Image 1 (cartoon, rainbow, N blue to C red):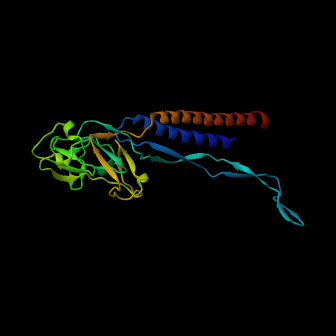
Image 2: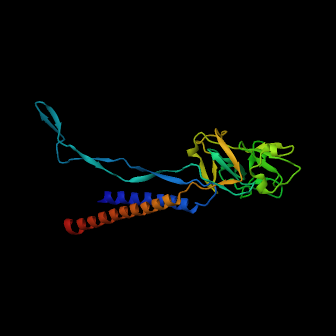
Image 3: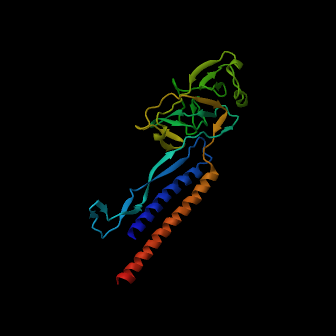
Length: 278
């Protein structure tokens, strides 16, 4: 009966952790570039059950045999093994804003923070008073040559992430989106967005605001294999709100089932102590 309480309690703790993950996914369903998390569980080692009050081995002229046969396995509980991020592609939403950029394929933009370089799929950029391309938190967006400086509406970004400017014109944002380099007079490529990927992308860690950092297990940032930059679009989160609501209901039902297990084991233990032993 104590084993049943322990098993039920471990199940409740695990489902509570899963509920926290699902709730966080739902809270960020409208967050640009957000990637949902998934929870993996691991069962504790099963306990083998054998018949007791036997000698253990019988002897016959033909040989020995087992008098403590294997009855079955007893579960010993569950724990959260890992919470990992699922980096599936989110849908692209057109914004008609030349500062907005989205990525198609596996990879990240690079921004410079006070803690060093961080990586994000959130391409909702703008420029500050110094003409520096920054994200919504004011962190500079990095190019391969460093911080990117542009003038308002005088640049385009091609699929490879190359930033082309024309110093002599300033365009309406709706005109910039969709323009090609040959539509410009005397275009100049000033830099290329610093796009990165990781050998073990599953091991990078979230830091909030759709930003990530590398770890010793993810490996250093590498050039992405296949990725395309789309200007004038933003990548929506990959959270399916219907799927998350179903998961939340499933978590609640599982939590209630484990709660009933604890309650039943407690009631049985009480009857044993108060009625049988007494």
